[in-house]
Image: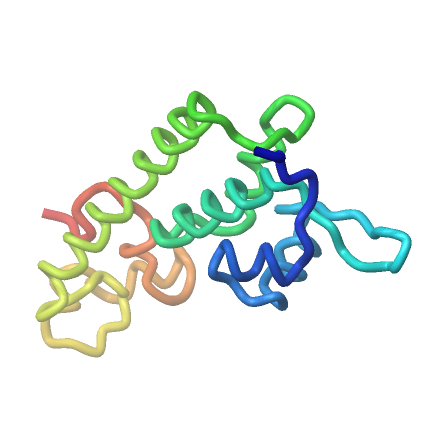
Length: 155
């Protein structure tokens, strides 16, 4: 069986399940790499399929492209992650996911009451923000933004 040495953009798009424009976007962001053949057509190493799979899996977890790019850049010679690399990356992303789950769980549990924005627009807000003391800490949902992994509102 002959090993595939390179793939065209259409083949990569079909095999990975992403649009050609997405491949161009990923390349523009430095997440994947290609080269041009003599006919000026993009060509990719087959390992780009693994990179795209990792990108798609991480995005489904809510990992930003900037974080994915930083993770790829942390690998020696910016290589495509192998099984061990994936384990390390997924552990880091799992910790971030757990923080977001806690944050969203707290937000969900408090959604029918005050969400800690300090806006004074709800009858309960004076309890959490008497005399608008939170205005000195900034605008918007200051309590909400302070403690991602703790209770959003003070006890």
